[in-house]
Length: 164
Image 1 (tube, rainbow, N blue to C red):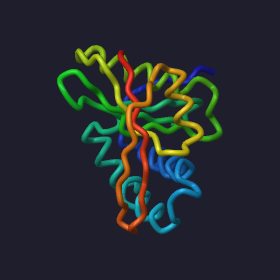
Image 2 (spheres, helix red, strand yellow):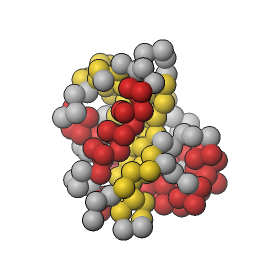
Image 3 (tube, rainbow, N blue to C red):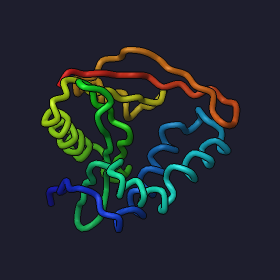
Image 4 (cartoon, one colour):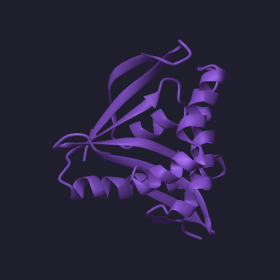
């Protein structure tokens, strides 16, 4: 069966929270301490916050397959001409099935319809899933950004951009 791409509903919050928690932890595994991982997922990906963020429009689309949410993407406008992908995860059991490409395509259509001409995304340095995914879709590395976390660690993101 083909996945459907649709706007998220508040009842999707438990699945979105689970997918984002698991996906984010996989991207930083071995790079960030367990305490920072726990701090981050407890804040950003608890069901109540996800439900609020769905209502605010922070999650743009979900992929549903056989009645279950298996992927999520969120993004928006950052300037007159630019859009950003803020959150993007596909359940590990459903990767490499084209679901990520479908979600990205739908968000990109939205960005184009709003008159945006470029998309940006930050990828955790060492993310073996994210970086190749974006590069094969025309994103080019622009810069590296580092920030100190609440636990005092340095977290490094790679910034990518593509014309749309």
